[in-house]
Amino acid sequence: MKVGFIGLGVMGEPMVRHLRAAGHEVALWARRPESAAALVAEGVPLCATPAQLAARSEVVVTIVTASADVEALAFGAQGLAERFAAGAIHLDMSTISPATARSLAARYAERGIGWVDAPVSGGAQGAREATLAIMAGAEAAALARVRPLLEAMGKRIVHIGPPGAGQVAKACNQMIMVSTIQACAEALRLAAAHGVDAAAVRTALMAGSAGSRVLEVMGDKMLRRDFAAGIEARLHHKDFAILMDEAAKLGVPLPVAAQVWQQLNALMGQGMARDDTSSLLRVMEAAQPGA
Image (cartoon, rainbow, N blue to C red; front, side, top):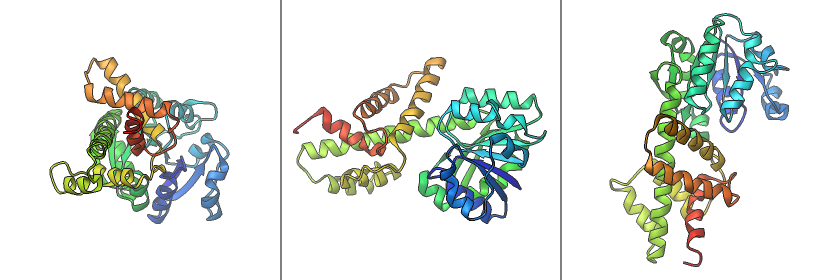
């Protein structure tokens, strides 16, 4: 397929490589052209505007930061909608609000253009290894058309429901995952406060019902005090802003998530926005200095 791609961060670049390895013809647009330099050096075309990219693409994949970024790419000046042909599809793999996804799908439908929201879980490692979990919100026909692209980038693709449903699933994923990171930070802080070997505690927990991928990965980072970003904490903070806004609109009580939201606010306030979310441990430590 002729595929456009926007969003060449730690996940986007390996995703492009998987698409090319699967035989798809990929072109790029980048807000910062230097982010595309490695792929351009390998012969991948770089377009001057999103509209130009849309004109040459059957499907354009976006994986960018926020709802406003996706809206601007779609319907802003020289945006994708200006030159998408009827029947083209915007495949958005960003984490944005369900309301934004539904709105963009409706606006595109008026022009005969398809939409798929397909946020992912698995991080940079999942992107590199093409093992991402993909949560899709789309009409069945649109999803069927882009499935070969998703299969090149991910391991499990689940059709959650109509447009916007993928983003609902991603909000649930982020709520569970980041709340578990916070629980790991609290557990390791409690172990340290007792003066016992926190690493031994984690090893014991990993073999029991508390064992999880989060405890394995994030617990290890906390013990090694490796707070270099895998995924920057500011992105989880953004995701929780979406989550809590949706909860407020729907009147859904999320008491645990609300407490974690405050810990993320504290993390941001302490200047750790671009560090790893395992830095929630440092938020706990700052609340009990000298302990």
